[in-house]
Length: 246
Image (cartoon, rainbow, N blue to C red; front, side, top):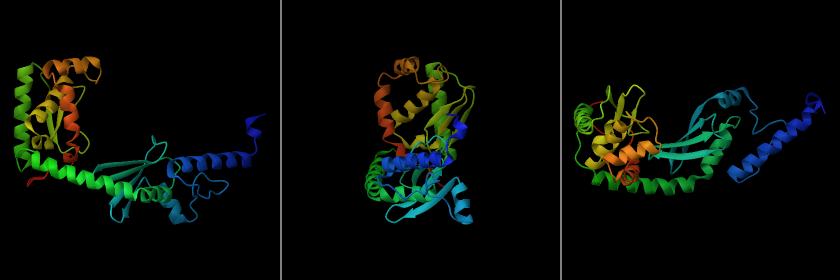
């Protein structure tokens, strides 16, 4: 049969059924879909404008603000807690924020449970970290000085260094061997700060995380894998730097 002659009504019905299956799989319920829609179809101009937005923040009692954000890569709702104050739901294309909010609210108990764990972990880590500089200028001096020491000691030169307050990573190394370091590295125990710096210095030689990268990193730090796992525990420190100078 010529695909162009396939009845439009059948196509719409098939699309609606796929959407019902999607919602059942990821939200645990079967909403009432209009025959010609994938999810809830906006019925007013204000709802239509809302449907076109890429972000929306909603308030959930006992949890706080939750960011609903459209993602082209998302195939289903993806709920993540990036820190105590950053909760995000990745919303797949074609899905309304109304349905995303319903999904987030259905996870309220799960969110509260994990937020409590994160708060406890944050307090424990804050108590454990060494005394750190109280402004970014002093923090930058500490990090750049240590970077230069390790660069010379290991024979791993770099091009330029930038110290930033990054929210998702401890550092990075560009193709031009420019190194970015997170200002919050100064809040880590010394061995973890050194690990993060050496990790980026090794990237001046190897730009990926393949076998050769880990072999070279382990050459300099035999316990690199252990340090990497330990560093993961401190992700709650990522974000704003608590100091007096912006």
